[in-house]
Image 1 (spheres, each protein chain N blue to C red):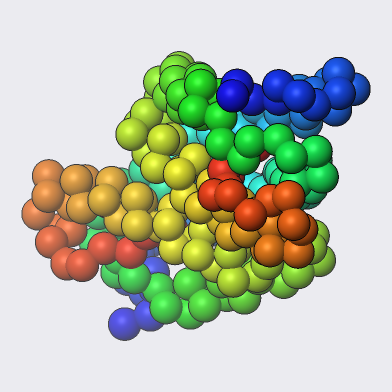
Image 2: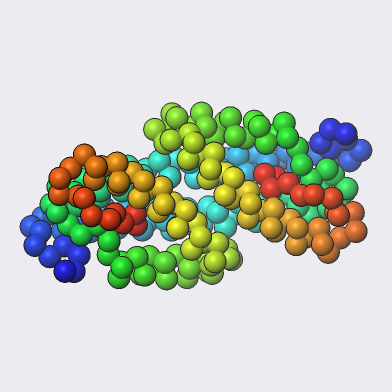
Length: 114
Length: 114
C-alpha cells in the first residue's frame, strides 16, 4: 500500500506538517555544513601555509566535551553528538588531505577538527 | 610542539577566529539535530499508533534528490549531503525501532527519514 492509505485525513495532515518541518531543518543543516566546510577549508590552508601542526588533541578533546554537554542540554544523545562530530571531521580530513597534497609544508598527517 | 608555536601572532589570531566560528556552527548543528529528532520521534509515534507503513521509498528518493540539489547550490559536495542524510536516518531508525518494540502495530521494518 502507499504511505498513509487507510489513515484518517487529520493524521496524514499532521504527518505532512511534520515532514515539512524535517525538510526545513535538513535544508538548514546542509547550509550550515556548507559554511562549516568553507571555514575548515580556510583553516587547512592557514595551517599548510604556515607549517602549523595539523592535529591539536587538546582542542579536539575540548570540542568533543563541549558538544556532548550542549547535546545533553538539548536532550540529544551525547553519544550521537560525538559520532556526528567524528563523521563531519572525517570529511574535513579528506579535504585537508587534498590541500596538503598540493603543498610541500603539509605532508604530515592531517587533523579535521579545525 | 604545541599548536601554533612558531607562527606569527596574526596567524594564530585568525586561527582562533575561525575556530570560534566552527564552534558556533557546531552548537547550531547540534541544536538543529536535537529538534529534528524531536520531530522524527513524533513521526514514529504517529506511524506506530495509526499502523502507517514505516517506509515510504518515494518520499525518501525525493528527500535525497532535494538535499543533493540544495548542497550543490551551497557548494557542498552532494555525495556528502547524501551520506549525511543516511547517517542521521540510521539514528532515527534506531529510535523508531525503540518505539516500535513498545507497540504491537509497529513490528514491521522501520524507516528513518520520517
